[in-house]
Length: 239
Image 1 (cartoon, rainbow, N blue to C red):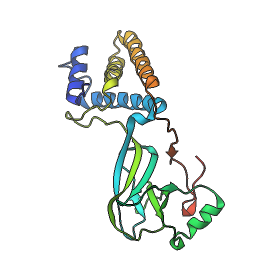
Image 2 (cartoon, rainbow, N blue to C red):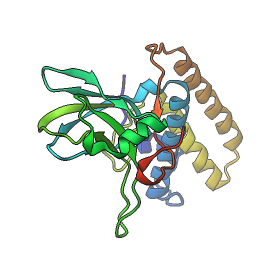
Image 3 (cartoon, helix red, strand yellow):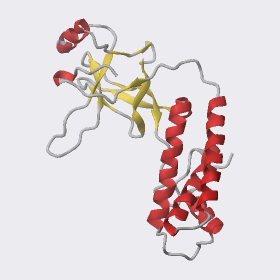
């Protein structure tokens, strides 16, 4: 399976459209069209087969530090699971549920003496103009330091094209991305081939949908999507 670089993608588009020497569509515009095509494909993938982007990241457990950073490329703050593993004990860190009894316990988290960790998602407000991304909040406060003891299983974003060496990591659907960019080029130029290009784009879309529909899921379809508003003290709404 071929993984295309952005250099290959842009050269393919320019060659197919015969615009190798043209300056009407700027390099930044073309790269924007390609990234928009990736956005479109990504949305289809997450709708039909989210585990295509299943990934994981490790985090250190640090004495006295209850916050864990989200993975930088997480999609929609969607977490599959968080696992604790210190080499001896292995368990899933459960998320606090939105019930009165549980949240009453959460308010007094410093007094919690459970042997296992639980977590919530805090979406704190910006501080001094600096946006604070949502973070994972552990309960109780860690009383140990264990490098790499936490593994976050999550759904990630597709890779974006930032420079010529960027790699498109949805190789099965790169032709959809190519066609999407070509359509945008035709739109800007007012090219009479736009209608036929749109039909071809929908052909590639159908191929993508059929491919994703036929992928076999692993039977686990519980997703925790943390894109909600939070009350003071971090109490979250039902998703």
